Image (tube, rainbow, N blue to C red; front, side, top):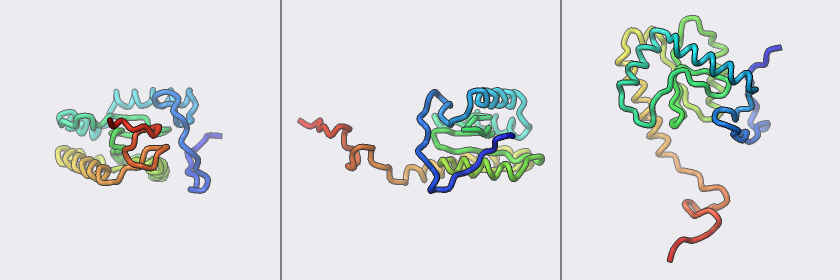
Length: 171
């Protein structure tokens, strides 16, 4: 029987697993994760026309540390483009995609705080520059939204910005 991704209710959720190694903290079997990475590598070698057009535009844009990686593995999903520092994912909807599978994957990614944007492949092919500009504007808006949110206090101390361990470094 093939395992599928399912969401737990808020009462059933537990703490996120401790990260073991880079990309290995999602409680996914090593063989499954290796297969996902190999599949993503193959997808990077053979991009769709829409992915190729957008990748060229994103490469030309100066995004600094917020660059979009192609065919990134996040959990048990392979996404078309991902900006992991922003927790932002861009998916290009192809004609042969399964909407039920995509909605399940979107729900699981959103459950861990990842913002998902979708574009149709036909729109990207018709106007790649406009699509890239639209994506970059949404990324900028998402960045501004993240900066506007108040940050949580560090664990172990209720005062914001207080040094860990309760020590004061003033003379």
